[in-house]
Length: 310
Image (cartoon, rainbow, N blue to C red; front, side, top):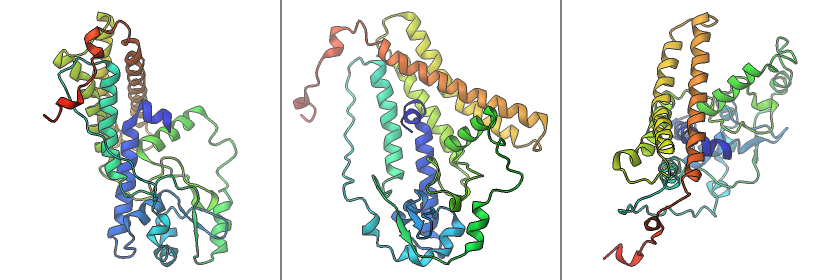
């Protein structure tokens, strides 16, 4: 999770947006009318069955345990130590470094992520068991894998990479069965349909790229060499273009039938664009530290806080 937050913080934002959408759907649906805190706790796998400690993470299971979840007080879920404060970002007429530019982009995404996770319980150490209807047949069926899922069916590298990318980018876990697991996947966001998450992920990732282009347009960033300057600009443009290209490829891919060669081709092209994006982000992270050498003396000037509000 920490690696993803550093290389692709937009994926964390997309996760927050998907989880917020799921929690809000439970909050607005008249069949449930849960609080937003309850909704987030469901998505996190915080409610588990008393028999087996299986996460109540899918809508069908939530419906069966509806009353027990409602009887759980919000005060028992809410994290009382959530006192994080948002520091003000003050932009001054100073020249700055690549590390500060990347920090600005991460701060913007963190602000958006924090907004959607405002009601999400934090630092919860244990789940809450709830009562529900006993259905032994469904549990036995869930714990027994289907006959066509052989032991080597998921062992190929290609399938593993595809599963990982679908989980991180889209929160898609088609083979996840809560009644056969004790926790939810890291990027689980419920089994509801999220129509705008892909577009929001694209916009957020492109904005991250535009933030890294600001030093080019303002000529306010110091580069020790011209090679590093042009490498920064090239990789920043990759951050801008890759998400848009990825969205276009996925749109074209959806028009082909499953199993066709064209669909497979666009799938591989999409994975290639994602790899290009990760490569560009990695280069920018490295440049953030390599450009720290030979810093001009003026860039080490401390901020005079006494003059900010006068």
